[in-house]
Image (cartoon, rainbow, N blue to C red; front, side):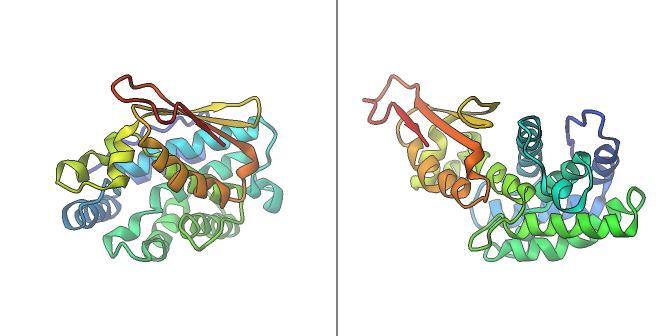
Length: 259
């Protein structure tokens, strides 16, 4: 069993070697299966397995590259004098493993994610980095994992990115599984209203996030879920968010929402 991880490596050979191992690791792929058994089949939640991990990893990588292009220095570079390519490894691994603890329990799943991820991170880095480098990267990855949920606060650029990228996986397909299973609540209705999420280089701020909603219910998803994630990410000053309704079937209560 293996999953396709289409990551834009952009010449980062270290990241490619890591992802090559991720794709073929049977234990990891089985734990993702267990995560979705717990999340989807037992709790009626959305995907918390490889699809979500891949989306968050790609979003994290895009956010990091935009910030670097806008001259924001990753914590790996600033604090440890390592390279941007190493920061890319951190955000991708943090994204891949952030929900792995769902295989154990929803409550405090970020703590279980750290416990499960440690062996994989060390194994995947074994042939690429020195022991000191592996220890640093492992520390940063585990911090990104545990701080993607409240009340833990991200203390690095990379951890803040993973926290925000996780919340950006909000397009309507994410809510389809729980909605079709009969779980109807404001979270799912709101998520079904989010048609598209685009991450772009910005003018007002380094990163602009553009969200298209089919109706005004999508504001709940943005104001209650995305906005607090950004505000508590430690990197909120780099982001500008604008959401607009595009549907014509309702009286548009909210035409534009931005922060």
